[in-house]
Structures are given as C-alpha cells and as structure tokens.
Image 1 (tube, one colour):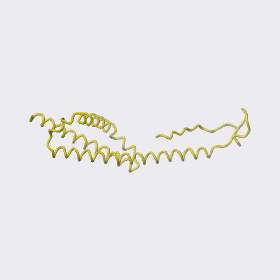
Image 2 (cartoon, helix red, strand yellow; image 1 turned 60 degrees about the horizontal axis):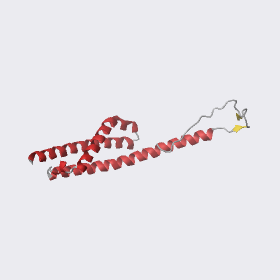
Image 3 (cartoon, helix red, strand yellow; image 1 turned 30 degrees about the horizontal axis):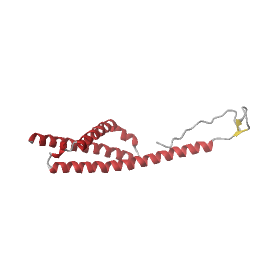
Image 4 (cartoon, one colour; image 1 turned 120 degrees about the horizontal axis):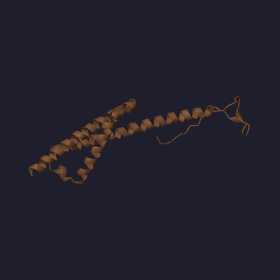
Length: 149
C-alpha cells in the first residue's frame, strides 16, 4: 500500500508542478495582451500548447481514475486544489484579455474598411466604357471583412 501512496504523492507533485508552470505561462500571455503587445504572447506559445495538452490528458486521466491521486496526503491534495483554482482564475483573466484584444482588432479592421469604402469614388455612366469620375482607370481594391477573428 505504501507504493500506491508514493505513486499518488509523486503524481500529485507532478500535477502541481505542471499546473503552476502552465498558470505562469498563461499569466505571461495575459500580461502581454493587457499591455497591448500580443506579439509577446507568442514567445512561449509552443511550451504553453505542449503543457496544456499534457494538462488536459492528465486531468482527464485523474477524473477517470481518482485513485491515482487519492492516496496522496491531504495537505498535498489541497495544494493541488489551490494550484488548480489559481489556474482557473488565470484562464478567466486570459479569456477577458483575448476578448478585449479581439474587440479592439475588429474595431480597427472595421474602421479601416469603412474609411476605404468612404474614399472609393462612384463610377459615372453604365456599361463597359464607364469610368470613375475624373479618372481613366479604376483604382478600387476589394476588401473582405470576416466578423470572426
């Protein structure tokens, strides 16, 4: 039975380390978005994705088999719970930061598109020989807006 408790304790330790590191990386991403520097968020993207996938896998495994961690000491399991709560809080913060960045980006794209559309001149006349007023060739360019960013 001691071996099972040791395994559970080791697993909980590893989950705490994983959760805390993932929380740290996502907090760095949040800071980058909040500082309006989304390019800085990309710095740790590969590690964050790798750890997030590992976290997803391990948490699903523990949910399916709670005995994997149930043998760990109570204080250690409480540390894991606190680490998970901190992780959940930083995920909520990240969601708000990304939503704010998305809103700003969409607003900029919409403003640029409206400006471009406002500056387009109307064609005078009908048919293949129609030209833009005061010009001999069309300088209009197509622009596509996608409401999902």
